Length: 257
Ligand code: GLP
Image (cartoon, rainbow, N blue to C red; front, side, top):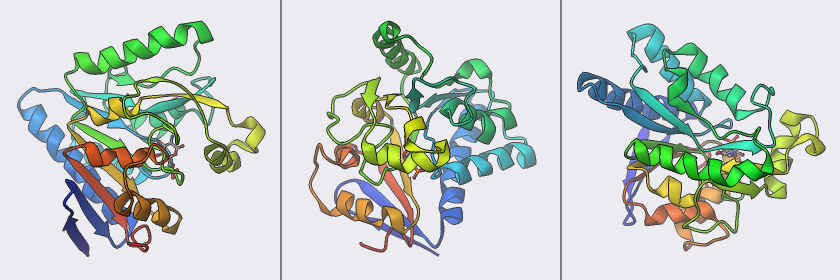
């Protein structure tokens, strides 16, 4: 069952019984956009997220490719973030994640997939980040930006304290973020201290933003996002300034609403 609520702040909230249904809905929207654009020989530009939240979406997108022959050959992707420093072939790099969950399983062109590079030397980062912004701009704009939410309200790796006008840059990770990643990495000491992330403003430039959250663990941040004011301490709250946001959550993540 799906309940649709539209609140006054241009955020459409969709609550699904479970994350599987939510992921199918999100993947379906992406599929429809790609089908339409492919028919017009148009490029589809997707902003992609990592973490546990979007894995079900990628599974469905792979299924569309395998079952329906949906082609991703006209799709260009920009990932939100990558740990820094990070070797792209490290088992916990977002590069590895994206290839495992989506890129290796579809016909997307490797030259059309952009992920922040965690292998740069410190002196190369600023120019690289400016180029990342320029690459997005050259594509026009991101058609659909996928987002997960950190329990501390981060989007991408825009941690509490990130400015609304921030662009792609190197950032320090919040302790909470590193603690959450510690289990995967086999201990907090192995989690990088920094990351390269698209900024809040880079995200807000997308034509449409689909923000997802599953499970009780996200219930508080979802309630704060919807019920509290915009705050630099909760970067997800900046989404209230965007005209076209869909919040797709499951019953558990909606349990404090
Ligand atoms: C990670 C990522 C975010 C992600 C968030 C939530 O650290 N950088 O892009 O949305 O934290 O993670 P998860 O989806 O695993 O809950």
